[in-house]
Image 1: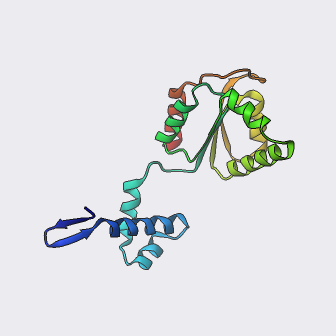
Image 2: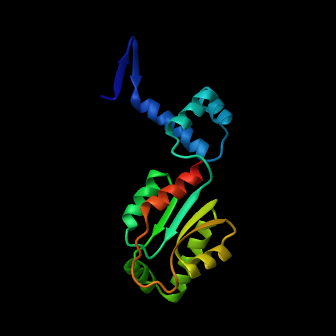
Image 3: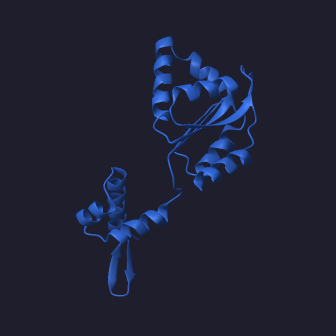
Length: 174
């Protein structure tokens, strides 16, 4: 039932959800809480409380990139639990398939797009070899947090301790 009776009031859940969606869309587009409150005829404190209610994590945007990892899905679940903004994890097989399915030009474009995307984040957690970590640090001017899994070249998948990733993400949250 889309309506709920509270005392003498008939409440529309759809109207509430539409308003919440409008608030979040405008805030995500860069409007201040006060601007949104004025436009939608709401109290600024309501918008603040709404954001607090839905907040998963404070702080800058975080990207997690790693390959070749054996437990990709487990690491992605940890990242999801902490609200990581961008996750790009590949097994060894996926990494080679990603490379082989593209022409040289396509691969270069994909890599440049990936670098461009990653540069928009405040912190980048990189799971990889010594060479990949150094290369990434040179390409991006952001905080790169390395999780070293071996000397380059790495052959086959490497298990990454999910608890180590959890601890790292906890540290970034505080």
